Length: 153
Image: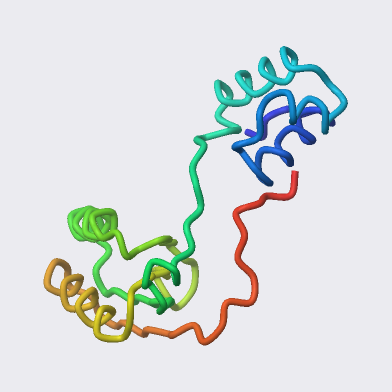
């Protein structure tokens, strides 16, 4: 169920998504409010699960993780035990930034960030040693055109 947000909540969320390190005073000034109401709204949105956590974004390439692969996975196994092992394997791999279960011909898509093709192969070999997979297709991203964590609020 979607949270009920008013215009002020949306302004605060936009500011936090732009730069969560801003002080309450800065957010209040930019949203036309004052510090205490802004703090109360942020606290409520955290309690309601609208704000899950605050973190920092890192530059993958600056850290030597220059290759981004989208991995398409098809499986012939749909038993609960297989799925449990597969999900555990994905959650234990820090290279997996995102994992989605899909409708259609492809069962799962992963976003994997590694240093290079050799590092991807190491990831791939480890994954298939942990869980049986029917078909894997890896697509190398040649250029990141858009990447954002900002949600339209």
